[in-house]
Structures are given as C-alpha cells and as structure tokens.
Amino acid sequence: MNVNSLKNRSILELTCDEARAFFLKQESYCSIDFPPYFKFNDLLAGVSKVLDGKNLSDFQREKPRECEDVNHLVLSNKDGRHAWRPLQLIHPALYVSLVGHITENDQWKLICDRFLEYAGDEKIKCLSIPVESLTDENDRAEQVSRWWHSVEQASIELALDYDFVVHTDITDCYGAIYTHSISWALHTKTEAKKKENRQNNRLIGNIIDNHIQDMSHAQTNGIPQGSVLMDFVAEMVLGYADIKLSESIAQEGIEDYWILRYRDDYRIFVNSSQDGERILKCLTEVMICLGLKLNSAKTNVSSGVVGASIKEDKLKWMGRKQSENSLQKHLLIIYDHSTECPNAGSLSVALGAYQNRLSKIKKCDQPLPLISVAADIAYRNPRTYPICAAILSKLLNFIRSDDEKRVVIEKVQKKFSKIPNTGHMDIWLQRIGLSFAPDIEYSEPLCGLVTNGDAMIWNNNWISSAALNRALDAKLIIDRKVLRGLDAIILTKEVELFLSKDWVS
Image 1 (cartoon, rainbow, N blue to C red):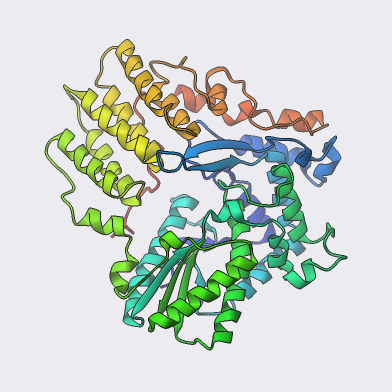
Image 2: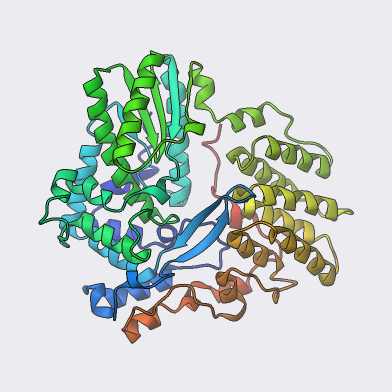
C-alpha cells in the first residue's frame, strides 16, 4: 500500500528552502489546464525578488481586502449547465508573500509537526498531501499516480479485511472552508480563540487566514481553488478534522475500521454496516463543527468492497466496446459513454485514445460531423475541454480553407456562449483558432493577453510600489517564443498529463 518512494516525496519531507522552491514553481502556483504558452515562472521570480526579505505591507497603500477582483477568476463550467467552479489565479504578490511566511524555518517546522499530529491515528490515512516528483513526470502526474496506488489499489486490497465500504465526500469543500478554522487546525481551537491570539499576527494560522481574506474582499468563507498551495491549506483543515474524527470514533468504542481520505473524499471500511453508519454520524458532527457538510447524494454503503473501490464509470467503460473501424462510430461510442457517465475520468481516457488514433490519420473526407460530435462532448463535459480541443484542432486541419475553418470555430464559439461560465473553454478555443483566426475576440481576459498583450488580470490598485507593479506585469505570463512555435494542431504533449502510463490498469 506504500507508494514507491523513489518516484516522489511528500512536501512534508522537504526543508523550508525546498518547500519554498516547490511552492514557487509555476505548476504549484497554477494547477489549471492551460495551453503551454502560459508561463508563470518569470513573473513569480520577479515578484519574489522585489519582496525578498520584506513585508508585503511595505508595498501597499491600502489593504488588498478593500479591493475587489484581487485574484483572477477563470470561470469553468462544471456540468454543461448552470453549475460552475471558480478556479483562481491568486494575486502573485499575495501568493509569494504567503509562501514566504509558510516556509520560514520555525513556521514550516510547526506546520510539519502539526501534520504528524493529524496522522496520529494509523487507521485514518490521508493520501493527498502534495508530492514532489523525483522522475521525469511532473508533480501533478505523480499526484494522480499516488491516488491510483494509494486509494484505488489499497481499497481493493482492503476487501480481504473488510466486508463493507462507505463512500462520502464534502459538499463544495474549498468554497465552504471557514478561514478562521485554519488557525484552529494549526494551533487548536482553544488556543486560536483565546482573546490574546485572535489578532496575533505572529501565529501562522492567522497569517494564512489574513492572506486569504486579502485575496477575497475580506470574506471568511472559502479558499481559492486552482493551486497546490491551497490544496495544502485545505489539508490543514481536513487533517484537523481527522483528529476530531478519531476522537469521536474512540468515544463510540469502535475499533474495527479503516479510513482512506483523499482530500475531501472518504472511504470508510468496516465489518459491520452499523459501525459504518455510526462513523458516518461521527464524521457529520465533526464537519458541522467546522462549518462543512457531507454530500448526501454521494454518500452510500456497499457490501461489494472490490466493485465499490473502482469508480463506476471506469467499470462501465471497461465493460463496453471501446473502438470501431469507423472514426465516426468510434467517436459515437465515446459520446454514448459521455451521456451515461458525464464528466467522468474514464471519458478523458477514452478521448485520449481517440486523439492518439486521430493524430495518425492523414485524410478525412467528412470532418464536420466529427467536429459536431466532439464539440457536443466538450459542451456537456467541461473536464474534457483540453483533450476535445486537441481533437477539434486535428479535425479542423482536414478543412482546407482558413475561411471555412473560421466559420466552423465561430459556430463552436456560439454554441458555448449558450452556457454560462466558460472562460476556461475560451482559452482553448483561442488556442485552436490561433493559426487561422487569431483575431476572434473572447470574453476571458487571459485571451486578451495572447492577442494584444494587454488585459487586467489582477487588481493592483492597492499597491503603492512602482517596482512591484513592474514585476506584476501580466504580459510576462505569455511566452511569445512558445506561442510563435506552436503547431496548428494541438499536439498530444500539450494535453497529456503523463509521459508514461505504466501505472494504469
């Protein structure tokens, strides 16, 4: 059940200097799927140089929380209808400042020691601490590989020891986290709520809380989603919940159980369904105390531990015919799977295989029906935007005239305009059309950076320093050399997470 330690290491194993370097990498700053010309390293390095050894308060004319739109929201539709996920690019100055505070030697030691306390109950395993890759894979690929080994495979193994598994997760976890609970998590609720500690700016929990409020117009509900740093902050609160859950289970006198937690997703293994219900009650009460709640629609008890350990959509995809000689019939098989298992991980895998097949095709006499099907899959399954964009770019390449291509991409754009919050897809539609329709306008401000190099991404009105404002020039995040060297067709390496798939079953 242990992940191969030669492939990655937990960030809790890093020194404070190593942790600072880890969090200041662009893939830690932004975990949103963007085309490869979006680069954040130079901007983060420039801001770090300006802020080095100084407090951010020395560079501001007012508190950031007094301003709106300090972070940049990349609107991402969640279900092809009205649900959406507010992915955020954190204001770089606040991000760098927070990383600096967290990775000060004493603060980093306090945080790491506290995580050891979170892991005090050997029967509650947190498997989602961010990791640093020690191979050619990127950190995100290693994180997903860790999920497969530590959650899915471990769950199957636990079928030897347990007869029941309870699945549940937290409703809108990141959006519901109470920022003051970060201090409770790091210092205990008793200490954090002492009168002398409530405004104590030396407590790292308060420092994190204040930074997050500065990012969000002083709101105390919700943390930004879209960075490894905030994944780590969420683990602080969820680790504190692990301690409280362990105490509650002990009070109930339950001893025969095992819990795997990956972020806000829980798998509770028991030999009695009654014990499962009792632990679920304990977890519900713990969450209530933190202002969180379990998702009743995703809570269930199963006596088939092996079957329940593998995601339902994956099992369904494994059980269906996965390909056809005809390109259109092959894509329609995937379309049918998408209607049965919307927005599923197996759907991205299926589309990846199709894109790989399509990349070897030299000729397609009727690309428009395929374009229509691929666009509809993306329309209804937002997590597939990048891979569907790659498929669409290849299919559009079979159309000879740039004018015809433009007409088609404008139709796709019009289709997506019918659903709200599709800034993320705007970015990928722009990537598709760069070679034949670079002048098409999109509502997402990041697209403006690509076309004319000018757009307001973060609100900097609270900053008084000219040097810091220069370092925050948003044009720095577009790599013009990469942009000029792009192929008209989106290549597999632009959208493929893994360099190898040896870990896939």
